[in-house]
Length: 251
Length: 251
DNA sequence: GCACAGCCTGACGTCGCGTCAGGGTCAAGC
DNA sequence: GCTTGACCCTGACGCGACGTCAGGCTGTGC
Image (tube, chains in turn cyan, yellow, brown, purple):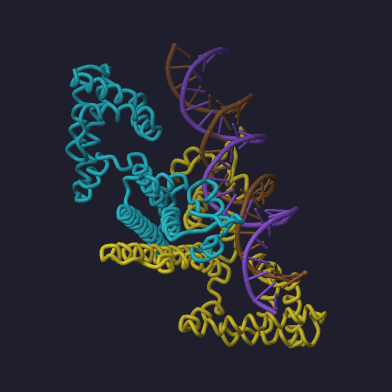
C-alpha cells in the first residue's frame, strides 16, 4: 500500500506517516524504484499498535521502546493495552462522578471547597505515573511479580499496605529528627523493615535491589520530592540508611 | 493564593499558570505591589474548568472561547462537561472492546483484516469533530433535530445524501466557472436547492438560518478549506449565493 | 501527450508548555 | 541589620508532534 492509502485507512495524515518514518518509529518495509513508500501488512500491524499507544498518551519515543522491546510478544501488547485502557476508563468515570457530584452540590446550593474540586486531578497524575513506572521497569522480573501479586489485592489490602508504609516513614522521620545517624543501628533496622515490607507486599527485594532503590530515592526527583515534602533531608537519610543496611547484610 | 500554592493544589506547574496568564486564558484577578500574582476563589473556579476542558482535549484557544461565552452559565458548563466526558467513556469502552475482540481472535487463531483493526480509529476522528460540532451548535434545536433524524439513517441513506451534496457542489462549480454572478438567478437557484436539501435531510433550514450557514462557509476554516479544495473561490461564491438567495426569499 | 492526482524531500510554523538565565521579594534566624 | 533560602518575576530558547507550504518527480486515464 502507498502512504495515502494507509493514511486514509488508519485515519491519520500522510504527513504523520512521513514523520514516523523520519524518526524511525515506523519505516515502510519497502520503496518503489521511484522512491514511493510501500507498506506491508506487518507495517500496518505496527502502525495499529503505534496509534493505540499514542491514543493512550505515550510520547512517540516511548512507543518506540515499547514496540522494539524484543521480550514483548503481540499478546503481551494486547494485555498491556487492555490494562491501560481500563485504567483510562476508570479515570474517566471518576471524572464523570466528580462532575456529577458538583452538579448535585449546585442543585442543593452547597459549594465545594477548592480541594474537593481538584481532587480528581490529583488522581490524574498516578495514572501517568503507572505508565511511567511500566516504562522504566518495563519487563523486569520484579515488575512482573509485583503486578502479579498486586492484581489480587483488595481495597483493604491497599489501605493496610499504605498504613504500613506510612508507619515506616514515620519511624524514619523520628530517627532523623532524633539525630540518629543514617548508618546507625536504629536507622538500619528501619531500613530493614522497609525492605521486608517490599518483599512481603510487592516483590522479592534482596539487599542489592534495595540498595538500588535507595539510590533512586535521591536520583529520581519524584521520589526525592515525596520524601522531602515529608521532612527536609529525609530522602538522603532514607537512601543512606537503606544502603548502609544493604552493606551490613552483605558483609 | 500565590502561584505556587495554586499550582500544587491544582496539580499543574507554575510555568503553566504563567502561560495561561500570558495568553489571557486565566489572568489572576490581582497582583501584590511587588508584582506577585494573586488568585481569588473565582480564579480557581475558572482554572478548574480550564483543566477539565483541557483534559478533554480542547486546544486552549477554544477553551477560552468556551469560558468567555457570556451565554454559558456554570450549570451549562457542567452539563457540557458531563456530556463530553460520557462521550469519552463511550469511545474508550469501544477501544477496550476492540482490543478484547482482537485478543479473542488471536486465541482462536484468526487474523483480523486491517479494516477491522482500524475501525475503532475511524470513529476517533468523527468523535472529535462531533465534540466540536456539539460545542458550536450546542443545544440548538436544529442540532437536536439533526441528531434525531440522522440516527435512523442507513449506509445507503448516507451515500445518497453524500451524492446529493456533491451534485449541488458540482452545480455551484459549473456556475462559478461559467462566470455566473453569485447573485444571479442561476446561482440563487442552486443555493435554494442546497437549502432544501438540508431541510430534507437534516433539519428545518429557513432562509435566515441558511444565510448564517453561508457566513460560516467563509468564516470557519474547516468549511472554507473544504470548498476551496474543490475549486478556488468556491467558498466565497457559495456563501454569497446563499445569502443572495436568502435575501430574495425574505424580500 | 498532457492534465491531474499522488508521491517525494526540505524547511519553516504552531501549540503547550519545560527549562534555564538573571534578578527582585519575603519571612526567619542570627 | 544582614544573610539565607524559599518563592516570585520576566524574557528567551527548546521540544515534541505534527501542519503547511514550496518546488519538483511519478503514474494514469483520456
